[in-house]
Structure formats: C-alpha cells, structure tokens
Image (cartoon, rainbow, N blue to C red; front, top):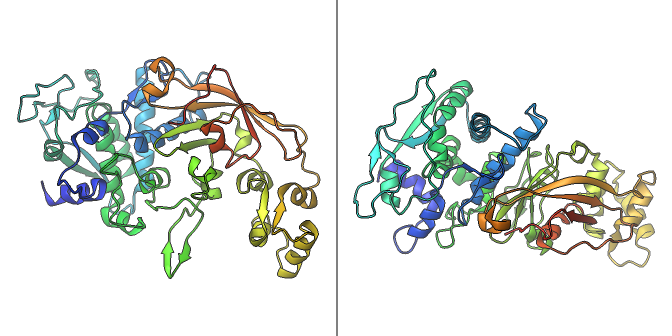
Length: 449
C-alpha cells in the first residue's frame, strides 16, 4: 500500500488492534450511490454504516431537487435527471470541502483498466477481475451496467486500495465535468468510498487532522463501522470539527471547535433529548428546511417543502430551537443578547427578579415570550407537510425505500398538548420544536434507526 493510501486509511479506518479492517465492515461500506426503484429521488442503503455519507448526500440532493429544480413533481426523475442531480450534489459537497482554490479538487477513482465488473466475481480469485472502461465520447451514451450493492466479498480491503487512482482538477467547471464523467463509478462498486476519499483528499488530510478534536479518532469506527460526527460535519459544512455547537469553546485551556456559520442543511440528534450534547442554531436552523436526524446508530433525513419554516424570524428560531420550555437563569443574558434585547447586567438582573420571583433558577419560556414578544401570534398552530427518509431497506415498510409523508403541528407554549406519539423521531424533532406534534399518513411512525 502506498504511503498516500496509508495516510488515508489511517485517517478513515484508524489502526484496528487486529491489524486490519473487518471484512464485514468494509463490505457494508462498499456500495455505490443507488436510487430506489420505489422512490426516484431517494438513495438506497443496503447495510448499516455508510449512512454517514449517504444521508448527507441525500439531504443535499433533496435541497437541489426541491429548491433548485424547476419541476412540479419533485418525486419523479428520469435516469438522466438522476445522473445530473447526483453529480451536481457530489460536486457541491466537494466544492464546500475544498480548502484552497489553488490546490484544486482531488477525485479518487479506479486506476486505468482496473474498474471492477459489476457482475458477481468468483470468490476463489486472488486478483480482482477488472475491465478497462474507456471514457465515453460526449456524443455517445455509455452502457449502464446494473450497480452492485456489495462488493467486498470480491474486492477485498487491500485489493481495493491497490487499484485506486488520484486525479486533480483545478477549476470548478472541470470538477463538475469530471464528476459527471465518473457517474458509473459513483453508482457502482465502492462508489460511496470513492466519493468519501475524494472529499478527504480535496479537504486535505492535515487540514482534517487539525479540525478533529481527537486526531487519533478515525472517521469510521473500526469496531462498529459507524461514521463519526467529524465525518458528518465534514460533508455537511466542509469542516471536520467534532462538535455541533455554535463557534469555538475553551475547556481547560483547550480550544474545542464547533460550527462557524449557518449550514445549508441542518442536523438534529436524539442525543440532545438525552442531554448528551447541545446542537447550536447554525445546524438547527439551516438555510433550507432539511435536517439530518441522528439516532445512536443511524442517520435519516426529515424535510419539508414549506419555505416559511426556514425563512422565519430570529424570534421564531430561538423560541422553537434553543430551549426546551425554560431558560436556565445562567443563560438568560446570552439569550437576550442572541435576541438583540437589552442585555446590560443590571437590566438582566431586573428581568430575573420579575420572571423568577421565587428564585428557582429557571425562567419559563412562556412568561419570557409574553414579556418581550407579546404581539407574537402563537394561538394558531403552525402546520406544514413533512417527509421522512430512511435509506435502510429493512427500516422501510416491505423493504421499499420510500418517503413517509406526514403533517407537523408546531404549537405554542400555551396550547393544549395533542399527544400523537412519543417516538424517537418526535423526540429528536422536539430539540428544535419543543411542542411539535406529528401526524403520519402511514399506520406506523417512521423509524429513526
């Protein structure tokens, strides 16, 4: 294995105690980007693990389809439209990850003449069966082989890394052209890994190590095969930071990096409802109403086409995003600053004494909003159509990867609670909308896992 490959392997897979990456984990990660036969704008995931790449790609894919594409039916796409949409999305993520325009973009693909067949290979072969795939002329339509789901049984970990080729392009226009020309590689054997390695080399291995809180932590867990938060953040924001809060924080003299600007697509996690972390407004309130949802082991996507959700005022954002029905007294000054209210210490103390007369140390969100935003209309619930995507076949009804449709009701603090469910999806969304209720069109709520 070349020194270049070894650096990538150590960053992505770490240094497993057994000396190599588990065959089963590599097999789970060696799928391509494949569209569902039952939902033309949804990507399939065949086994657990690669959701750390597939879910962010799906989120950006939906952003481009819902908000950048002129079509009345966003759930219908021809094969050519799928190709264009996927390649445009992959290019966008690579552009976001690019550390410097002068260094260009790196694309990792198969070495010349080393593209694995998408048909099943013999397990007795010691060398991967390969075929040369000439670059199609622009006037020709390339043959469209059936994409393979899993290929590690045929192309092992060492073999995979022995047939990689690194290609550099220096302009965005060249990048988009090259990504489009590599469509069959993205959707075929190991396409997810080829793209992941492309992002990593475009960002720069040293740049990623400098952003990760613990540089010894691999991007993919070598024991369970799950992607790290740094990997998700790299794909969503272009920065491989390990935390989800806004900005940087100091802890015992160490600077802990967080998210530095509003993301295009968001991130919410069930871990926040369990008080393990706190997601900041840059991820909770993205530019587009699309959120990656994290459970303990999986990533899915929640989204809506309702534009008012992401164009709402700062008051709405903080009201429904940052606090779970109350404001700790210690955070009151920060909240008032964030909402552009007077935040001088004397005035903050006055507000504390008025809104917390019994000195309980907390200020209920209701009285706070009535004090500062009395004209805010919260008596009528906001409702909007929502969709949930889970790429894992086994997590979908009859193993058909399809969006689950529903309606979200965002109630005010003084509205009576309408209990619809208490599922992980709802608990995850309550970290943004504490009073959200979900009405799904299916008999069962969608799965977060």
